[in-house]
Image 1 (spheres, rainbow, N blue to C red):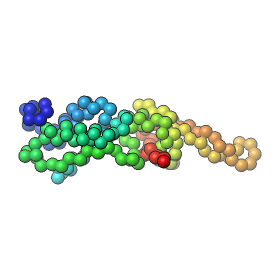
Image 2 (tube, helix red, strand yellow):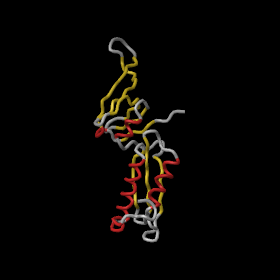
Image 3 (cartoon, rainbow, N blue to C red):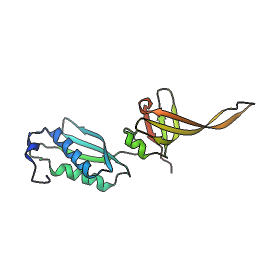
Length: 166
């Protein structure tokens, strides 16, 4: 399939279909890397954003770029191609990203509040967050530190970002 031996079924595809097919094939060969976003502009600028279960190395981006670039014909369609890893501070979009970040601290925005908490569990349907909060004592004056935990369905999360500590 690689290089000059492009199968005939590729010839009947639109440019966007070719890019989608090539990207899917590439990610099958790199199972620890997964797609976050694919944008193809009207000017045929292809922007691929990926993440990985163990992070994304520069070589991963190069490999994805070469895989796509090797089977597209610039004579047929002039294009530019950019492959990058998801940036630090980018919101989590996929359940797979939540699962890989269990044990890390997130800033989670719901419809009504912002919570900074440790991600202690990520299932296919929800996350479990844990954090300490200062609340009024049940008996007497003053405040006490209490451990809070929240089971939060993904649909209730407006945005979640992994905090970076140095």
